[in-house]
Amino acid sequence: MYHPSKKVSTGPAARLALVAGLLSIAACQPLPQPFQPADKDANPLLWPGARTGIVVKEIAGAPASRALAGEMARALREADVVASATSGNRQSFLLFASATAAPLDAIRDEIQISWRLNDSRGRPVGEFKQTAQALNPAWKLGAAPLLRALAKQAAPKIARLLAGTDARLIPAATGPKVVIGPVDDAPGDGRDSLVRAMAFHLRKAGVGLSEEITDDSLVLLGSVRLSAAPSGTQRVAITWTAIDAEGAEVGTITQNARVPAGALDGPWGEWAHAAAKAAASGVAELIERHAARRSGGPK
Image (cartoon, rainbow, N blue to C red; front, top):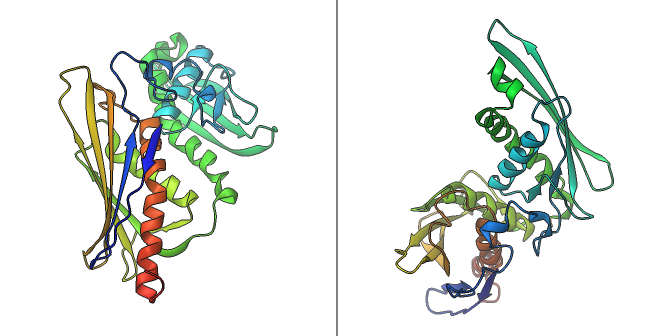
């Protein structure tokens, strides 16, 4: 887990610098949960800090029901949702589905999958119907590429259903709105997953977000630097820089960590959430100080 240590300095420009570091990991030691990639497919809903998540039930009517459920759990994790097709905890949401296939022509089937998400008490959260086409043998034999494609198509919608349930837990936004810009030079899917994770944790911290820059907006930009991996680990540095609508720098947050070599070359998953969660409180503090300076309040 990222363990932030904050160093706040003020000066003529009233700049705020925060350093959030991940516990250094010796090459001979296992990674602390939930950062052990080898354990992600086992039971991610038992990871420390996994307050809730989704258990994917077998898909009724699918020839390869268990395999499709497994692919959906994997696709949800790649969409930054803690998910498992095997077991969960008492707060886990449950994802049910039923599938049908009808001949579209001589060689293709039309597949329809109805997905339904319930909360831990069995109350419906939302549902939607997915439609796709596939060659007859692919669906009947449960071809892995097809199952993977179906799961990746549906996972973002399911993730949005789950995200909507958190709205009542998020405090009302205060202060200037923040526009989250791109994250430069991030390997794997970090460019997108870091933005999604940061948006999620900023909302939880009560920071208002916007997609349009106004006179009162702040823009949060990110960049990633990754070292070579001569000893099986890599040093990753993530820098978040806040600028105002005129382009003047408001403050920066820098995070440093050592990760297993290649760990960030694909989906970032929980790595993105750990980094964003550690930095979000610093961003919120930076915004609060900026708003106070603009209003003539305490510096």
